Image 1 (cartoon, one colour):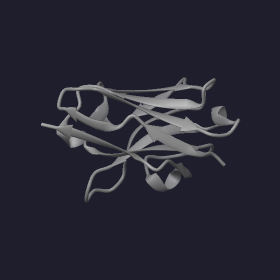
Image 2 (cartoon, rainbow, N blue to C red):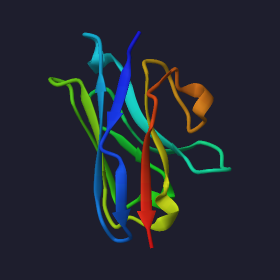
Image 3 (cartoon, rainbow, N blue to C red):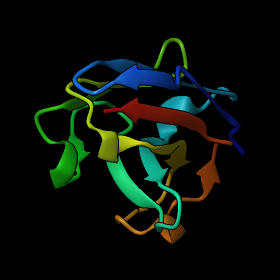
Length: 123
C-alpha cells in the first residue's frame, strides 16, 4: 500500500511555470514506478509523464515533451513535475500515481492514485 498526496497546484498565466510535488507514504517508495496523469473538464484522464523506480528512465506524453520534467527523490519519498511554458490547454486536475507492476499509458494500469491538485493556466 502507498498513499500519495499532491501539492503545488494553482493559477498561473500562460507561459509561466509551476512545480507539482507528490509525497508518498511507506518505506518501499523505491519499489514503485511513479507518474502523473491529468484530467480536464469533460475529458478522459491522460498520462503526462512517468519515471521508473530508480529514476533512470522517464516517459513523457508528446504534448508536454520539452516543457515538463519529472524527477524523484527516493530518500525523501517524493516525485515532482516541473511544468514550464504552460498553456491554457494544460488546465486540468493533476494526479500522482504509483505502481510496482508493469504499466501502460492507460489509467487502469496504475494502481495507486492521489486525490489530485488543480492547475489552471490563464490566457
